Length: 291
Image (cartoon, rainbow, N blue to C red; front, top):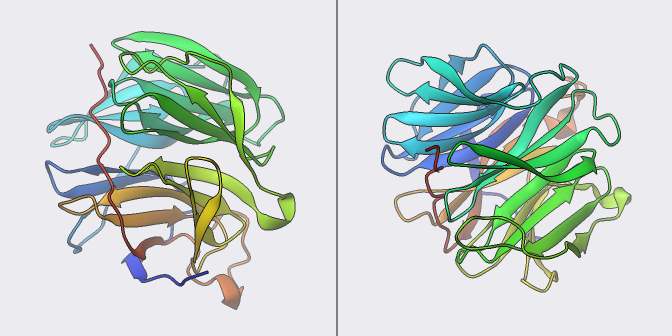
């Protein structure tokens, strides 16, 4: 197990999640779900800006250079980057105040997969939805904590997890629509003693980079599910990776302070966002197709 390189951002999130790069602006965006903040920082460093949000949001995606899409507790929102103005584009579980959004990623086709879950991680309250050009469909239901949504570069394969079950699945997908074309199959199972699978990305070479909640590490898996690398991070509750930099060759990972004793000296970096000491052949997520 190799070590970590340093801090990308020293701001401590209650529940840092959903990082996504905006290469046109050279910035990383991520969410503090429980703090109701959209965080923003240039790839090259500098000031981190915290934008207050009117809803609990969990993931962010590019629409264009002027607009972001946020997955939130009651639907999908468009957010104007310059003014911060938001409007709900599509309601999603808006009639279920007991749930919120969680992990989400954009398929190479421009379709979005977004997970939902109970606000107290109630068993079976979670689902994964597909959104594409205004249409919403339910893909998977009966989950508890949907996570690790990621796609291969050619759009033929998806992965997703239920953190509660400790399992990551893989499923074939249509490159043109991002819809599943087969049954899900187990890709990786993590024993409870080693933590739980959280957010993930897949690089150009097909490696799956998965944050291990409770395990203080970022793990790399080969396409056959073999763990080929594990990188130690200085926070137990790491949540989600993303590729940043002009060439998408740098990994960052968010984390959380939720439920942690603030006096713990062995987890004093909890909630920070970390830079990982490996060069990767990463790629930026495509824009999400809203219309």
